[in-house]
Amino acid sequence: MSFSRAFGPVLGASCLLMLLASACGSGSTVDGGGKGKAGSATGPNLGNLAGSGGGGSLMDCAGDLIQAERIPLDMYVMLDVSGSMTEVTAGDDTVTKWDAVSSALSDFVKDPASSGMGMGLQVFPITHPDAPASCKSDADCDEFGPCFIKACWGYDLALVPCQTDAFCGRFGPCIEFGRCAQNAEFVCAAEDIGLNCGTDPDTGKALGLCSALPSSTCLATADCRPASYAAPATPIGELPGAQAALVAAIDSAGPEDGGLTPTGPALQGAIDQASEWAQAHPERQVVAVLATDGLPTLCEPVEIADVALLAARGRGLTPGVSTFVIGVVGPDDTDAPANLDSIASSGGTNKAFIVDTAGDVQQQFRDALNKIRASGLSCELAVPSAQGGQALDYKQVNVTFDSGSGPADLLGVANAAACTDQGGWHYDVEPGQGTPKRIVACPTTCTQFQQTDMGSVQIKLGCETRVK
Image 1 (tube, rainbow, N blue to C red):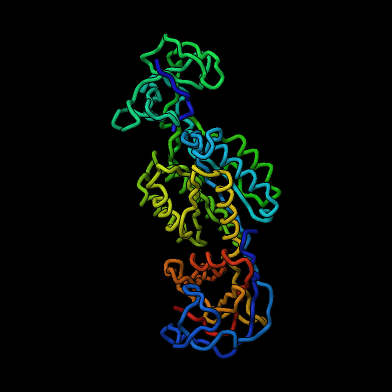
Image 2 (tube, rainbow, N blue to C red):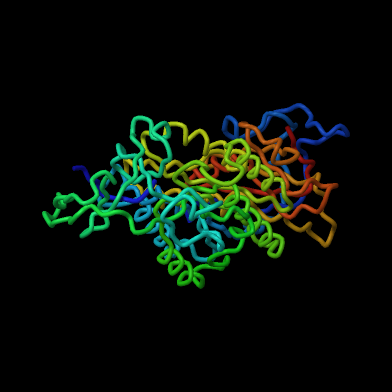
């Protein structure tokens, strides 16, 4: 006789003072071919942060200083509620991944430091409206099957759906299971139906007889349509006003036994909603946040390269939508960090935030949200208006950064695709192809901003733009 517990299937550190300077003087120029003339930057050696091209110091371009306008941040969070979120964390076997993640997200929404930013929420998977509510066999599920009547019997942390022993590997065999009559949290092997399950090892209470499943759920009930995920459970709203609705949505959500992971359509839906919101609110910076504990297991696309391509396409929209990724992964998920990094990198955010389930998941997830908030608040600035009622010359805009030990010039690049490990900045729209609204720090430079406790960014008008 064997039985098992049924856990279910599987403003931040950046305090940048944003200043704007207007006037002109001697400095690096851009010749007719668009290349900076030879020279050297002044200020401290900031490695990849400061460029080496260009002529004299931009510090010679003196003028009036006014406060620069930061772009307010809105985020659309796509939150994983697949069955594996019911797994307990390795760091604390009394806390599931969902317990930790949902608590961290609620705390973040309630944090006074989040006031002024906007947030919207949807979860994935969403059940397709035509999917059967229950099943007793694969035939009952039709296109939404198979029916969840088999599990990998050698996996202790969760009830993992399966069809074959090969799928389970070392966690096999793949067998049909039943439920213990007096405590449905415990399952038993179908071959033991009619036998006594014994007692709960934690409480000593009787579990009753092993009984056949009265019904189960179809495994592929997830909606694979991006439009379903683009429709928010809670629309983007500014905090703290949107706090109550967001917390209620988080509290009402939760993982479903056997739920699989349709990452592709969920991410596409998140980008679609963020893009729609950004177009309607050009004064706001809108990002998508994908929070997941696994890789795609359902709905096209399921290949990581194809999911990353969705993030890249979002970044190329006008205005562009960056994709941040928070991955809640365990020590055995050896491929997950690199795969999630590829999605984040394609989405313009460099690397995924990896939450290790062997540690404090709630605190790590909260730290990731804090960093996303800091990134949005410090790495995009509004393109300023020219002084004196003149039209702004986009070829006479420069950005300098002072980490506290002296100013250094940042070099302009053509667009987000031209960003390298050397950092720099670019417009959200290339001049000549549209009207720029924002100055965007490349990911490496953005990281430098975030790692500086005190510092200042200056935008200077009237001197030829220094470029790579």
